[in-house]
View 1 (cartoon, rainbow, N blue to C red):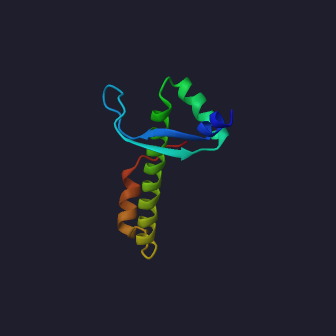
View 2 (spheres, helix red, strand yellow):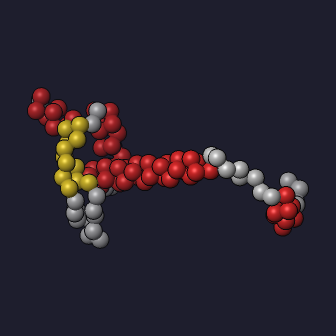
View 3 (cartoon, one colour):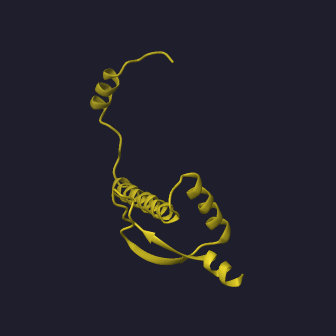
Length: 104
């Protein structure tokens, strides 16, 4: 029972790389995951009819993409922190005049 519990907490997953035939093509790693997260992931993988490894790979990919987006936003915020984002009065008027002014 203890061995099964240990295997549940530490699972091997393949990260990244599914080809058109859904064949795993990636790096095998061992990660420790709290039981509630593992159990929720197990249920979700079954609901989506997908391999648990694929679920973990997709989740990690989404997390990394979100982090990358946050880094880009932080860089842009830093660049524009010292500059005014206000439009010149003439450009602002032209922009305002170019849109429809319908009542909501």
